[in-house]
Image (cartoon, rainbow, N blue to C red):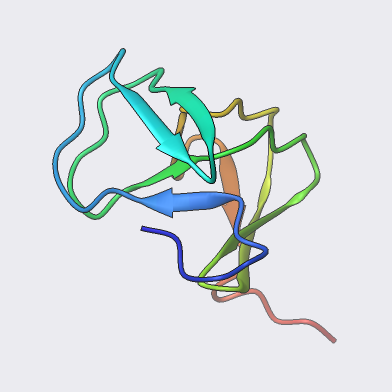
Length: 86
């Protein structure tokens, strides 16, 4: 599921299997990992240092390059939640 037009991640609405082919905005994505219901996966390349956008909101920053079809989780993004900007 994608809700924001600028999102670079989608949310799995069912458990998905590694190697499964999905079509997102007319682009084929082959999942690099199994994705559990409710978890995020990249729908396009997200380069290290780029914002991760879900539901139209920036939720973190990629700490490595994340390829389309890869699980997006705490191992490859730095969350902006709890960060105090002064």
